[in-house]
Amino acid sequence: MKPLITVTKLGKKFGGDYIIKDFNLVLYENEIVVIMGRSGIGKSTLLNIIGKLEPHDTGEIMYDDSVFDGIGVPFPFVFQEMETLLPWKTVRQNIALVNPKASADSLDDLIESVGLTAHQDKYPHELSGGMKQRVGIARALICASKVLLMDEPFGSLDREMRLRLQELLLSIQKKYALSILFVTHDEEEAKQIGNRILTIE
Amino acid sequence: MDNNARNRFYRWIFVFLILVSWEFIARSGIFTQSLFPSMFSVIKRLLVLITKEKLLLKTAYSISLVLLAMGASLVISTILILTGRKFQWIGTNVELMNSVASPLPGIAILPLVILWLGVRQEAMFFIMIHATLWPMWRQLSLGVDRLHLRYNRFEKAFVLSPLRRFYHIYCLGITEDLIAAMSVSWSRGWRALISVEMIFGIVGTQTGLGWMIYERRMYMDTEGLYAGLIVIALCGILFESLIFKKRNLRRMT
Image 1 (tube, rainbow over the protein chains, first blue to last red):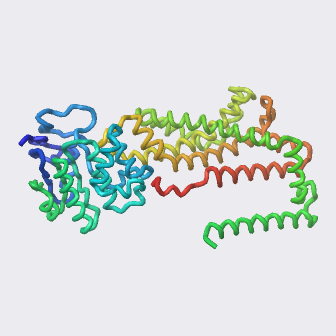
Image 2: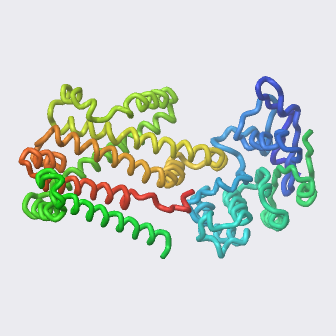
Image 3: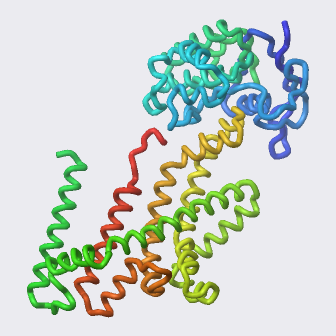
């Protein structure tokens, strides 16, 4: 199996002390790796570093066997905060914004995959929390990346909604053969969706 | 009756009571007609000013000056905000300039401006920009900060081109702040203009509402003076309460 992300001895300092030290990870094709740990331990920081949103102090990150030094970030994100949707754009417009080159057909297909066809002309304030997260997932998928980075995307949803979105995520992962790095503090969620679980202590 | 209709009704009742009180005081003889004319004579004079003395043209001229100054202030604010975010030292110094200049009423710096630029339209325009720029810059700056705070992670995570980011996030997202900025800017500019017109008088080929009101005093045309003030108030209501009214842009938040 081909490694898509290889993290070796990753370290990150904050105020002189290491908050992350000697972290190793390999993400292969077509799998979901869950990074789990208690709140505040640095899971989101780790994901930000792997996603090139933050720099790291030690170690190496390889993307597809090479170091990423392109412009921007290597992989799209799905955030927990649903406020990152632009309130003045419809569902369809929010998704299309991040990839203007995406065809109308691929957009339709994606919106259907996340079950939002009937809601694509609505604005974020007209959507439930679960729907907003589905928009977030679709927005990441439209970037046509083989890897997604998901930072506690279902953390602010109720249990029933979380279970439904976990099922949706699994079906989408299977459909598009995605590799996903998924951060959560919920052990049950980690076991539900992860092929492998990395626990940070 | 819903809340909005009820509020409108109360407002009309209030206006009616003011008019009735005015008429009562005018006819009571407490003040002379030259100091406190009746509402009917003021309205009659207003109609004469509109039909025979180009009041609407003068008002339109005054409004156009304020709008022109606001347009220039919007451009300057945009440049200051963009450069201020790009270069921190510019941002810091613009903040300092705002702290110093914003509290200064336009009329206070008028003698200095006349010294530099003379009694010309350029001087009027300078005062107008001074009056409209700082509230515009402050409101838009706060709006940009709010948007940046909220969408910073999104901007980094999904690499949009600078132009797409500028338009889709900041231009579209700043609508509410822009309306608020225009409202405050208009209010400051309108007040400054009326004062400046009273002092500058005839500059160029056209005079405005401020000078017209000042002239009424010189001709002891008290009805005309009140009529002018009513027009000022109506312009204020038109722009602040209707055109730059805070809208319920729920989908903008």
